[in-house]
Length: 414
Image 1 (cartoon, rainbow, N blue to C red):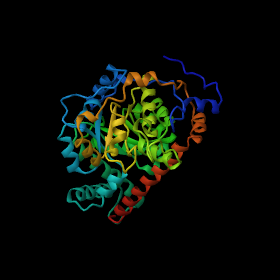
Image 2: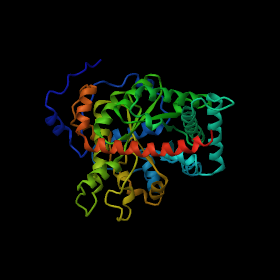
Image 3: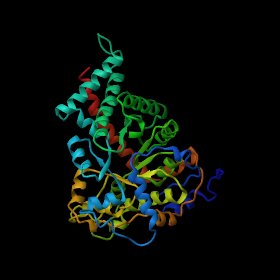
Image 4: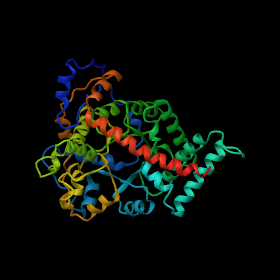
């Protein structure tokens, strides 16, 4: 077993200067390796295929398989693709292409399911409310209405996920109530409840990922859950520090948001050299994700890097720029992509996809040191990470607002 290393000997300022090789890439790397990684069940076999492709070539760039008829198919040859949607018909349409294997959901999609009026979704809502009433209420009402509504929210998320599991071949990500992001114990309890409900409905834990916000508390909850065989997706990742902490905790997967990282830098004058945008390889979000991925490959972590939330690197007014970040990260383990961008990829030629991200080359260029960190040192570096702090707070606030909307909708049914 590799011994834990002492905290980095250099001062905080020097250390930050050493690891900020790209915008927003601040943090340090842990020494603890994944335990029992060989026993982890993976549904999406194409993830390991993408890893093999990445490892086979470490220099230069190569185009994807010549058999692909468009950029979406070419990208799917290099990277496992997940669809970021809660719309059953749209998911089914893309799953039928064979390009999409997984799906991600979030509080917005669950909230939409609770209010869109479609009979299929209404049935899921009614079942969730009935379930909560039967579990927690009596004939003359609910002793704790808030607790009943929370249970209905979890049940609705599970109902939505169960339907999607029947459409895609791989895994579905289901998020724990975002309002618990700073409460480790409550997050663990809600995650266990979600998994138990899935299992009651015949969905094994090998088909689901539990999404947890990338707070220190959420990452600690991940550590507990992974030890119990519950695979976790650490989401709202805007910082190298979050990515390193998630790997040390044994997270199955992280969801960094390159587009929102770019937003943060653009808002502060880092607009690049292209009249308001960045060349895609110099996009701060692209660089941050590549550093996270390279760190995992350099030190042997098997945590999957699945970027989400995309922006046009060169600017919204540039034709074809909507998939800049996606193309710049072709070859990363996995991506989750919303339907409009999947459509854009399907309309582009396969030759637009080049194998940009490779395990060997990204791992070889990783310069971040590998050492164990504590909560104290994590929080010290976190306070210096402007992008991470700002965007995590913003993301939690946005998803909290959606959860509150859903809570209000469901409360009226009790």
